[in-house]
Amino acid sequence: MSAQPGTAVIGGGIVGLCVALGLAARGHDVQVFDGPDRDMRASQGNFGLVWLQGKGAGYAPYARWSHEAVGAWAGFASRLTALSGVDPALRQEGGYEFFTDPAELEQFAQDLHRQAATLGAGHAFEMLGPDDLAHRLPGIGREVAGATFCPRDGHVNPLRLHLALRKACLASGVRTSAGAGVISVQGLAAGGFSIRSRDGRAVQCRRVVLCAGLGSAVLGPQLGFRAPIRAQRGELLITERLADRLPFLSSTIRQVDEGGIQIGGTKAAADTDGETTGQMAALARHAIQVWPRLAEVNVLRSWAALRVLTPDGYPIYQRSVDHPGAFLVTCHSGVTLAPLHATRLAEWIDGDPAAPDLEAFDEERFAVS
Amino acid sequence: MKNDSRFRDAPGAAARTMRLCLDGRWLTARAGESVAAALLAQDGAATRSTPVSGAGRTPFCMMGVCFDCLVTIDGRQNQQACMTEVRDGMVVERQQGARRTAAAS
Ligand code: FES
Image 1 (cartoon, rainbow over the protein chains, first blue to last red):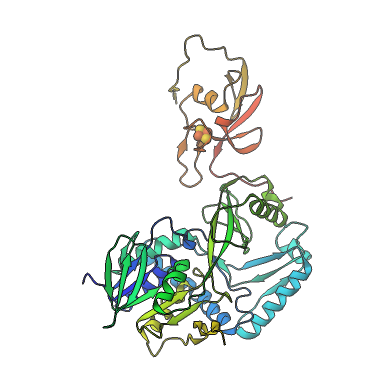
Image 2 (cartoon, rainbow over the protein chains, first blue to last red; image 1 turned 30 degrees about the horizontal axis):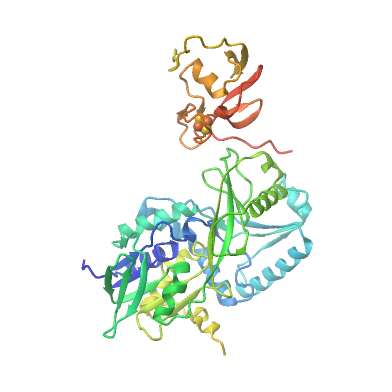
């Protein structure tokens, strides 16, 4: 193994490690440059959903890409467990969106119809009124006006997924630098790249894949990418562990494999990751509205984390025009898309003829015309 | 099995004038002490088992941060024994594993 990696992946979160794993599986020499512990890390603060419901209702390529991803999750989870010895605790038995406002339910139902029209036969979802819900989920709150259900939705333990990816990468020969804190990436005149870390170290490599989450907004333009990435804060609560199983998964309430109930889903434009009492109280109220039995359960911890968003919410997969060999990979659904980032995206990075056509996700769609 | 307390009364300690019931057995306790202190004074046995591995635990930090003192008090599960003052007639149960939510209504 040479000291200089063939491919450098900047970012050691779920997205970066998936890309590294996929490239290593194709025989490449890969080094992951991970930032300091105190960086904003969506991979360590997220909700762990493997979610299809509603995705890409207004953008068919994203609906199809998400659909392919959720279909690949079971196989990916087994592969990860075999490689790493860590089980990411995938449960994919369907998920609900609950609504207290009938108008919002109606609007979301239209999204689901549009999504279903794109995905065609083989994709199904359900609309449930209060009576259906009371029958299916005895104990549901009376204020819930209805729900939608997608049988392909599920969740993982996101911290265990991150650990499994790290171990799978190590087992596949990927090198990682912890605490590297990359501050600049430069294309070299002779080809290849020079990556400089905060501590002054510089490493040269042949290719570079930017998977630095919010950090890509700073590093991307150095390689000629637009990288229009912004932060959105989400706050989360987790309760004490429960011996009984919650009989549902929703996009805002889920029971972790170890028993605690995680509650989340707030959205605020912000680039700091502190929690607010108002949002936390709203989360608790929402959970009790949906499942009144949670009222007596104690909340143990709360935190906030920053989502990584593009202007339209869809991923960016972009080859650098100015610097061949540089790639930008960024998305908000790093968990859902993990199985594809660890397989198909590596094909695309390699320019394999069998690679998927990802032109729909290039950042030219944000060009000001 | 005899499982002695690791704690001894200080000379001149106040008398135990309160009664509390632990898993069906009546114990005595001092006014003003915490449930955790009363339990530690009885014997060295575990006062809860953990939800993940089932390992036994007793109160540890005595100041509300470690959550190793969880017990059920008067029917309320997962209460911190070190943060709860003894009341006469209190009913305490060891917390076995994770708590449950109320049965379906
Ligand atoms: S003994 Fe530590 S919280 Fe009670």
